Length: 326
Image 1 (cartoon, rainbow, N blue to C red):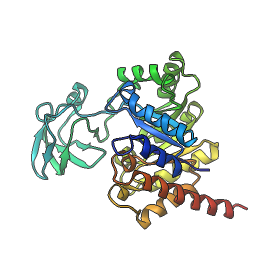
Image 2 (image 1 turned 60 degrees about the vertical axis):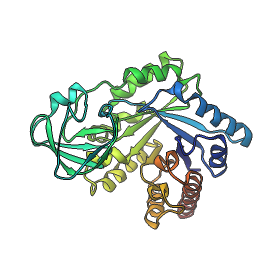
Image 3 (image 1 turned 120 degrees about the vertical axis):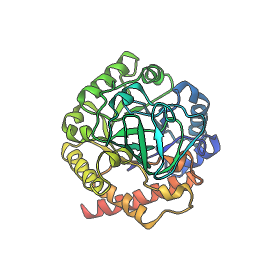
Image 4 (image 1 turned 90 degrees about the vertical axis):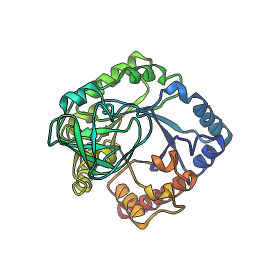
């Protein structure tokens, strides 16, 4: 059976909602630690355990680390970036020193998972090519530039030290660049008493795609993370890259998970689009072992319905797959 993951957030943090999500077919939940610490989610995790107990349905708990992802700093308030306007990094938009040192005229910058696109005019000033609202701590990627950040942040290591006591079953390592990142994570988990905790490797950059075969022995599951992967390759290339990763995993017998915008419309609508159901169907036909929702259950208006639709669509696709292989 295809495993179905939701993401914990304001829309799904109550015990009653979590009970309904479990009954609707959710088999595990993701906790995003890009902006917070594991210990801060204690109340939410207590609600999850209470929901499990009252429904009799156990679930997996995945934590998604910060990893080597680059993010902007804290803004006094959300910043509206209008197309054609200019903005200065280090002043209007705070960024890590490593980013400031890497910026050069002509570079393209993707902010907030690619929702915003800027081009550097000078070493600090950029022109907005694709605008929108920018909030604190959103992701930043410089096209063609690898800043060589460590695999784990200090916050990641603190969170890993508490993983076992909070019942974490798997850790999602972001922006995996090679086997060394996973070896580093495995050692940190083992040192923290988490040798039983699984490793899910997020493939979301060019390096991860290129080094995929060497990742397989060092992780329990591959994640095709289409958000940032869609920034690392062009939007038109993304479907082919997803297919290639899936094929490599199938040949190696390595489970893989597909995530990002599976049911994006359901953040605001009670039913999915035909294209979304087709996307889920194709992921399952390609051999996906797991599917994950993010904003749909974290902040969406229909977290329970989203899980139910994902469960039903995955089951229908799996039935078709099994029938074709008989």
